[in-house]
Amino acid sequence: MAWNLKGSYVETCSCELMCPCNLSLDHGATYDFCRVTLVFNIREGEIEGIDIGGRKVAAIADTPKVMTEGNWRLGVFVDDQATDEQLDKLVRVFGGQLGGPMAALAPLVGEMLGVERAAIEVRDDGLRHSVRVGDAIDFEVEDIVPFGVETGRPVRFDGMFHPVGSNLTMAEARRSRISAFGIQYEGKTGLSTSEFSWSA
Image (cartoon, rainbow, N blue to C red):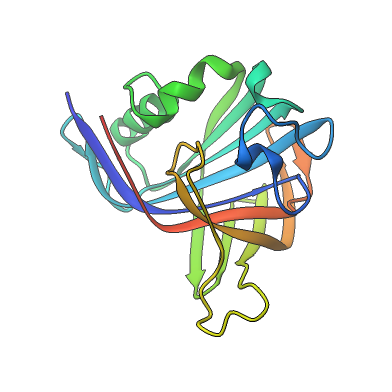
């Protein structure tokens, strides 16, 4: 059965500004690993007839320097307001079992670290985006407005391969405390978009 999700997105990763993995997954990360937290604030949508609007999902991954080598370690948080049925549907979408953008990345995951419920708070305040996931994750990124750009429009990457979309806003971390599923790192760079739209 078809499904669709719409909402906003924010991430932060361990690479220095800018993350080579965002240019292409087969480019090596800044360090000998790439650790990333991807946060989806779902405003509206349904999965196999189940309303998913208002739910949030955060995924944390630990990957090799070159992401396309696979063997990713992945943990997923689903917002603690989700019903059991919503949780099941969200895990299937974000695990790639129901097709869509995450299905392309699923073969790269070597170890699933688990799924947990947590309070997930996402705040978008102009150029700043902050995320809190229980006691495990707390970060804030700020969209980058290039020097001399009088319109205040932040810089965007266009044409990238990313599960959220091909055109995302570049950001840098302002605050970072991340320790979940045995993965710890300092977020340094990031991406955001006020609108993502998935369907399958």
